[in-house]
Image (cartoon, helix red, strand yellow):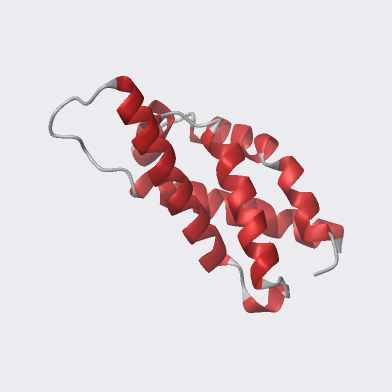
Length: 119
């Protein structure tokens, strides 16, 4: 059972990460670094959480609240690990995509406990 949750959470987080990559938009003029970082974080967390929640299969028997908490946790951990440059490399299918996915997987490990508790 724990292996099933581990595999599900890994798949959900990778799907959400890739979706968050697609949510980034090109800037037409260079904004300040702080504004760019803030916009990146906001967009990334919203895209990641939304995609993660929508990726949870009904047969996973995860409550809506647990899904929200798990995905929000994953988004907050992932955004601390992934940079805008990482996102660009992932969108381009860079050879370091696997390494970025593994970094995110390690970062979100603490969030998996949310899937193991009773709903």
